[in-house]
Length: 220
Image (tube, rainbow, N blue to C red; front, side, top):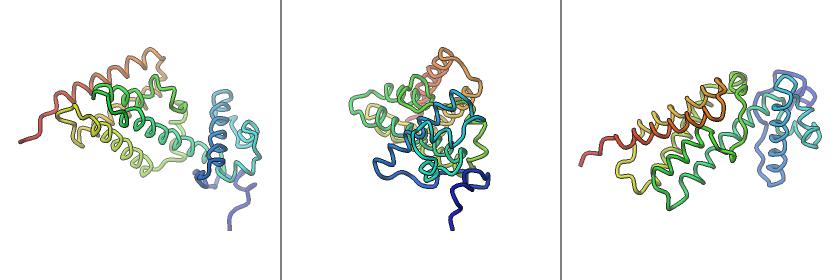
């Protein structure tokens, strides 16, 4: 039998993950509104003062409706982080894979900009303090899943580079991805300013392009 909603709200034993994914357009609209309110409250008041009740009030829905999706605020954070990853993957496909007339250097520029989260207003906001809360919601298998999804996205980008004579192999794709993604996580912890973030992302792009140009040609 499912636990009552009040128990889910008050207790810490509830699973720190969303209860269900929105399928219908109305449900997706509701969950997006919840995420928007979640971010506003986080940025205004911080994690410690964020509650599911406050999020429901900010969203304009009942607490019970929020509990249909998120039994507690850690589950809400888990859902939001997954939303960030899915938004990133969709943006990579939309901006670095699907266009048909981009040179490979432009595809890499879009890819690195998005993965580094620099000059990327199309992506949901991600607060550095979210990294400190990962242990409450993410297991190694979750990190592995994201890693595999992002490496696959890098692969799709380079598969679309018809003007690149020698695209990087799987091992090099992982190296490039880990360099950019691991760097992003560290610079979030450092909380670099916008200028420093842009300089770092430009350096990552240059390193990626240099590594791709120097990749050995496949044997005949």
